Amino acid sequence: MQILKDRIQTQGKIMPGSILNVGAFLNQQVDVDLYNEIGKEFARRFSGAPVSRILTIEASGIGIACVTAQYFHVPVVFARKFRAKNLDINLYSAEVTSYTHGVDYTITVPKAYLHPEDSVLLIDDFLANGCALEGLIALTKTAGARLAGAGVVIEKGFQQGGQRIREAGIRLESLAVIRSMSPEKGIIFE
Image (spheres, rainbow, N blue to C red):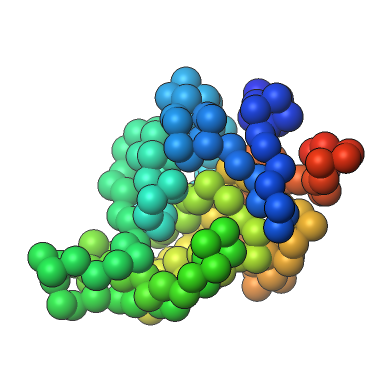
């Protein structure tokens, strides 16, 4: 998706530890027009897949999932990283390690929002080591739902997450795959 790659090249900032900061347009300050193009592209790529729910993880994935969901006309469910006092006690849960934050989370989704008859499309902003997607996959499987696939805005192809997800037989569509990045050479896409 060229418009996305152009924005990554011009506004993305490479940080220590192989972190890519795209806060200027993707996950801190939101470019709604770009989100709309991202949602359209996910809808195009998954047009033949039956999708009854979109599942994401808080917080950066929610906006992207919502825009994508408008093209499928389905609800968005998001996994919480922290348990709120007002949540139902009947929850699906999975363990996730955040690459960016270096923190372990137990993500949860109320059982009332994810059903065995669902066909679930996972949507997230980044894929590095794959832990967030693996947690969402675990929630989907625990619910007995079908996995339609996973859509990721930016995949760090030089890390192992995408490879593990694909080797597990899951359809993965990444809109921009970064082959390498460094302050000296910049960002190189596959």
